Length: 202
Image (cartoon, rainbow, N blue to C red; front, side, top):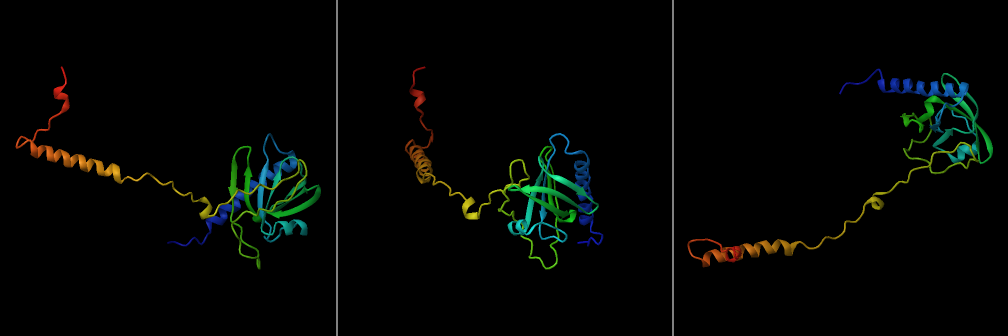
């Protein structure tokens, strides 16, 4: 298989991160238009991510923020963005490189993007699961996206209901066939099977 030395996959992701940069600049300068709002998931272990130790302890691998009703001081540069949010009434400021973004979703128009994030040097191997621990934002504050329930193989497998034994229905046609064969022999060489409808009054 040919080797992609140009890494078109990474070039494509960089181009799509430019889409995020553009809409964040739009939100920072003009506000969110219409019903648009953003769910942004990022790798908290990625190089360049800056957040308080409190949030870092709660989200050691990844975190989802929502830019909708209440955020402030959104600043966007070529490679990253900063934003102020409140969690459980406590103001926080996050610095997030665009290369740390793992997913971007605008529910208003059902638009979404997903990215591959390279773990920072010395970081533990990335586990592709959603961190179920969530911050407790105040009213109208940014809220992390709720994690979807996951099921193990044992939980998701439903036992099949036992079906009625099929041996009897299968055996009936065999007995009927045997009886028909016997009837043929009893009628001699003609092999004609007498039907009851011949005796019905016309």
